[in-house]
Amino acid sequence: MLRSQALAFAADQAIRFGTLPVVSTRTAYEIYQPLLSHLEKVSGRSVHLETPPNFKGMYQRIQENGFDLLVSPPHIARLAQKKLGWHPLVMCLPEHHSILLAMEDNGPANLEALRGSTIAVLDNSALVVMIMMEALKKKGLVMDRDFKVIETRSYESSQIAVKQGVAQAMVARSQGFIDPNSRDRMKVMFEAGALPGYVFIAAPSTPKDQLQQLRTQLLAFGGTPEAKPFLEKLGYDAVVAATEVAMQRLDPYLDMTEAKLK
Image (cartoon, one colour):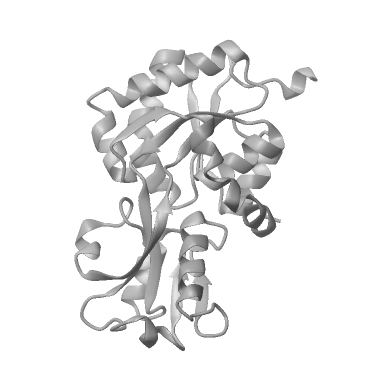
């Protein structure tokens, strides 16, 4: 390995910490600040938060080893592990569902009413969207035939699109990220299959002793008072060590994930 490609975990270098492109950079910083502070304290290194613009951009950075540590959607984490040698460290619990949300007062009454409408999604490469589109297809509603899809920059942007009538529904996770005040004015039209939690993955070049150290530090953070509000904002209760058995559950999505990220 060339020296220039070495992991940026040396004592004099910052940790490049990547987050999912599901909220604005400002919101991401507010959410992740407790974890960043913990990592800086236990590692003695500064931590730079980086939020890629979308899932394709995230995967491109993964391919370029552009992060040292990354919070990844589970399907992309598995792809990075299988294809590029990234290391799963911990996984968030509990699992969620993919849900279709609409405005309570004037939104579509049922799935049939979605014909000819527009659905806002964060990113067509997101697992939550893949699961929902497949479930709607089984109900006889096919994207680009029965309804249109618009991609937004964040869950916040999807909410705005629905509130302003640009879209009649939006795809989201069953917990986390959506502002409670806005969520109270929205109804769940449809719920689809289970979503494994986010996975923290480390770059392929991470030394083995540092992998275990990172895993231990992340698990330790999960037991601190600061972790509870942090995890709640993400929609989770706990972090546990990622196992190969858990990661294998993502294998059925690998081909679709890779195709959408090209």
